[in-house]
Length: 235
Ligand SMILES: [Mg+2]
Image (cartoon, rainbow, N blue to C red; front, side):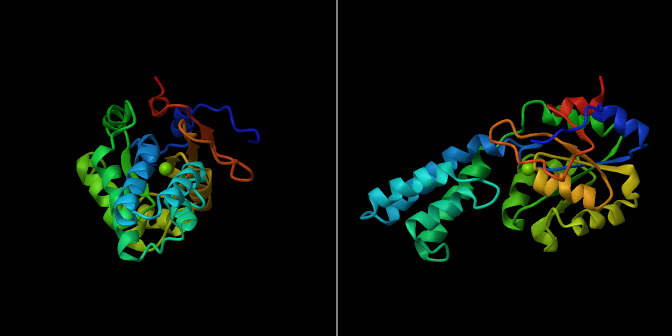
């Protein structure tokens, strides 16, 4: 990691007159990383049921998946590649379905995140901008009734635009009627959240992931770094 700024996120929001805070969903509000290993074990279990002769290859694929970078290749992607399993085959579809079922069934808020959202909405317009397929992200959003807490929800799969494409943030800003200079985005991914918000001209706040290695900051230096969402409240 290169050097990151020391400025307080709450002070920055105040100084810049920010009125809209956009939040990433996975590993910013919801604790998706907590389920990563459990999901892959469930996928391997399904593969063992579907491919009874492939036990040792499935064990190897599980090890490769657990060790894979979740952001680039993806854990399930590494599992499929090692197993040489076509994700479109009947077995592949069943394995992916099991992987996703565990995510939606067992997902929970990051501790304290819902309370921070409730406090922030007293002072800001709130948005969620999340990358992922429509059929995965909306069940998560509905499970936690996030639509009742957040003014604008933007799912990349609905638009065909994915962070870090600034277009997804521009879509939000147009919908909310807020200028980029008065908007901030908070997320755990340097590559998606920080780079995308910067490209759209928004204030970028990075919440480094706690349960996996953070991305390299490189050229995508955030305007502020927080360790906990509560820091946005400035109390
Ligand atoms: Mg995230």
